[in-house]
Amino acid sequence: MSTSIHKIRRALLIPFAIDIFLLFVLILFTLFAGGSPIEKIVLFIIFIPLLYIFLESISREVTTRDDGIKIKKLLRKKDFNWENITNVGTIIIRKKVYLLLTTTKGFHVLSNSYEKFTALVQKIVDNVGKENVDEEVQDLIEHPIKKISNIISAWLAAIVLLAVIYIKMFHF
Image 1 (cartoon, rainbow, N blue to C red):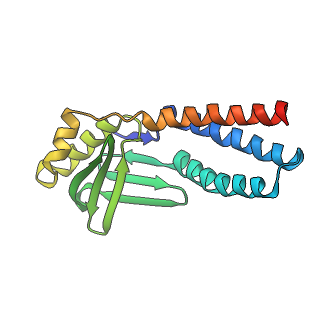
Image 2: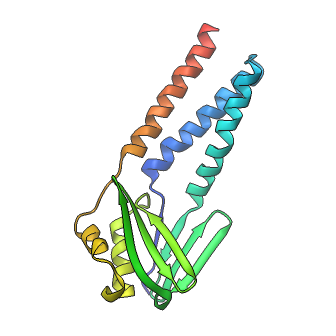
Image 3: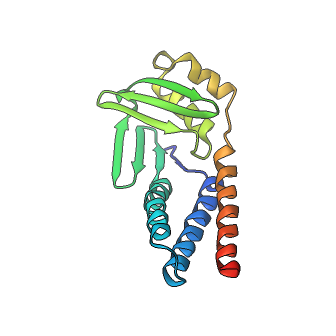
């Protein structure tokens, strides 16, 4: 039995986790070192959705098996057989790729933020059958698209947060 598990890439999760931690440190600093009320509110408004997105990202998992596929998200799980997938398509926006799995019960979207995304797409195509796969998906396998701008952005956010923490600690 051939099973493969795909999670969101660590190269994205590591800087994102650092961002969440630094933002939390900044919140603590403003709470205990006397930040303005507006500053506290804004930081909490930013922190809560980012924390949810982070928890969603670390819980995402796609498992392919011989008999089907399981898509796991935060507090949700979808499990279906290969026969239930009626079409595999793709949407490409700049370097962000979304794989669309149309099933008998709806559709599901997978992005190229998953590790070994090309291998995941190949496994899906092999099991669904070429007649149910759009041409763009085959092209995606032959010419994979890598997106690193979100990883760079997460590292830049960490640098900015470090700078803000430094300024708060030593200049106020």
